[in-house]
Length: 433
Image (cartoon, rainbow, N blue to C red):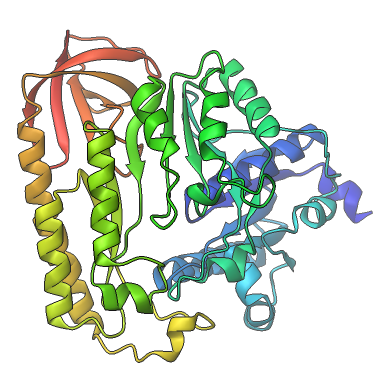
């Protein structure tokens, strides 16, 4: 009886966390839709499925608050059932069951068939590449692998996502072709570690092979690389970025730190010298490439001197894009045995120092763009502006290009050439050529 009643209800999927979670929610929604279920994303529904994040403290707090919010709605009779899936549920299921027992059931990151069964649906293996996208129709995430084999001491992702499992190239090409037929023009390749792709199934790093197949997909015009690990970076990928017009001159490579002692304690498999040599190689092979990185401040043992080494390195390297985060002391990671000896207030002050420096670097780099023409894709209209991006910018995290909507009309999801007329720290202003 439960299965039948569930089948008649509207299912609301709520997504928290990173782009990998967005992708997982889209796959879940595609499966439900193929089973004839009525499914919505972050809208009103009779049944709620919360796809949680459990990466660091802030994300865990947001996930728990969201669960509590929907449990309260259930107790008020506003929703009938609440299910929880994703990283937080994978990592803390026994604690969650004990602390928030009003959730109807908890599922882990690889429990999709079980979750579907509970929702009165069957897992359809034949749905290769089928999913219900939640991003604007012209770009989509393409998750090329699940899990991670890296031993980073600060990271809990292997606890939640398991070992690396690459998706075969043939399946990814099918998925890209289906997305292109739906109007997707930009693919954003994601994984916990793009550069590890293929080692498990092809016994070699196969990111380059994958890119050479994806550039042949009709309709796809931009391919963007996110989350490339610095150690063991496959150099053939640099040649492909340089020579293939469809592959954006852009790399997201989380370097985390530059002090060799900190890198060793982080178990990153690299050093100051190796990191700088890799960055020099990037700039030599692909001079126009925008490099995005993320850094962690306040890792155990990060003295003021070691922090200042990183700050000066940021000043020297002049990254095009940069994000900075405070270290989160996560249980069951190998760094948890180290003393979390940088006060939270000091961690936050260090983030502010780095981001203030990066803001100045970004402003200077953007001033150099004034008078130049860039090919942009336009994501949305916001107030009096159309909001777009160059190939050097990923959605939601990087710079935007603003074109006045007062005397100009642009089709969203389309490309246009824009001459930059003014620039701020993270925004460029321009006019159609």
